[in-house]
Amino acid sequence: MLDKIQILFTEEQIRSRVDELAHQVSSDYKNHELVLVAVLRGSIFFTTDLARRIALPLAMDFLSISSYGEGSEGVVRITKDLEQNIAGKDVLLVEDIVDTGFTLKYLLRTLLSRNPNSLEACSLLDRKARRIIDIDLKYVGFEIPDRFVVGYGLDYKQQFRNLPYIGVIQPDKLG
Ligand code: IMP
Ligand code: MG
Figure 1: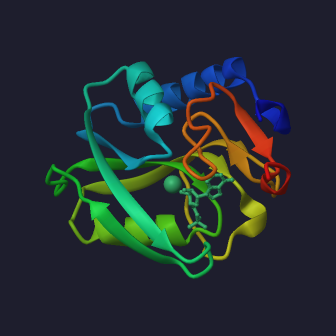
Figure 2: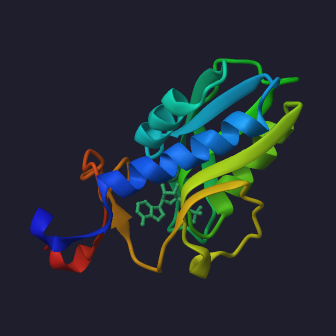
């Protein structure tokens, strides 16, 4: 099955890009009360790798969502909320991929209503070609073409999250 996956970004490419992002975050958030918020489950590896390379004190929290309909319906629900009160904190929301933008828009709106001192978004992947909602992404790992990708946290039917690389998969070829 793995032979149906075409590598888009190797483990090494991911590591060096995550290093660059962590560097940027470390300088942007100096003297701030940074809270990294990971959106489960897709951004789990990205967030933990990023966090370990940020040279600042920080807190981590997690939320989990479920989406109904395929992307463009944009109906998102929080199934596991943050444990921490983010009022007055500098929150960086970490996503795996922004596609139409509905998911991130919903999350940003929800978190903003809790009065953080600042709120920004960081996504490992950005598939701009499919964007419907205009989103302000402060940090992006890689822009990708309009293809379905898996690995490094991203899944197809809950599989492939554990691949150390990111690859393109053609679901119709998996049977
Ligand atoms: P959006 O709301 O359309 O921006 O969709 C974003 C969400 O859809 C992401 O957080 C992912 O969970 C999922 N998603 C979109 N494209 C892919 C992909 O290529 N592989 C795996 N998950 C994806
Ligand atoms: Mg996701």
